Length: 204
Image (cartoon, rainbow, N blue to C red; front, side):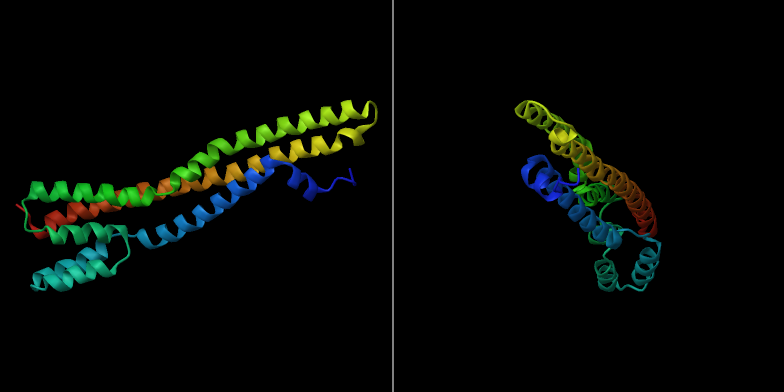
């Protein structure tokens, strides 16, 4: 086993290359979504208070500017509501609903990649395991006779593929579930802000 070069195994196993690529994808989209949610998440109460005070003072343009300055997803909903606040209550509620759907799509962007990796990467690892076992038996057949050293490389490739698949899939599933919870929380915040905004402006 000491003669086994892990780097050589990696170079010769295309499944390990696939797993490496999947791990890079997982890390990349995890960082991107973390940064996006860091800016998008937040309650709209403080912004509604500012907007309400400005509207009461007749400062519609400043109210719109205050909503635009905030990077939060709920701010985009309030900004859209300000843009259409002259409409009837039913129309405004329908417009705010469609805006929330748009913002939810932005929140869910790339999450399908993490979910897909979590579901499919274990099978890639399993495929690598099967390939490694096949190589081990092939080496044994070619050698004709020998001890564990003959099949060691193939077995090592099989076990590394299994471990690699799990190492990529488990974090991807955890991160996916974590971000989906963030999507749900932010969606609720947008719904609450929408309802309070409609009441605040007194739409008929």
